[in-house]
Image (cartoon, rainbow, N blue to C red; front, top):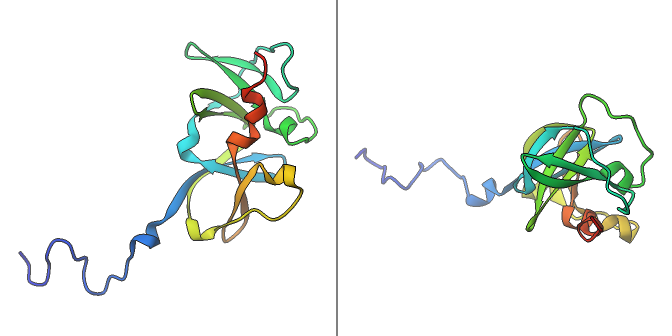
Length: 165
């Protein structure tokens, strides 16, 4: 064994602490002009937009269902859920497939630019705004060049989970 190395110590000049590694890995996505994010652990996969089958008597933000490898998955339009005006789908449109407890749901987003790691220290509480909108926001990630709105997908999709199928 080398002198001064005990296999556990990373060197006397290393001031690294476990708190330095405290971060969240996020998937960022765009809806309208805004950029949102959610924890990557919630994401099952990201797929290209595909033809949806409409289901009668669903809330207006439920676009329909898709067949994903033999599993029927409801798909939610976040644009409609957030009260934004309709926009024609483009080539970057994706469906982010999420796991919500024992249910799998897709959300339509306009693009998925990146997966990133954000230090927990850079995540702030959501601002005090209209309570119904604040319920959807779990935090705001302060990045050097922009802000990311962190969504609480359980709250955003709560009515969709209990919607008639």
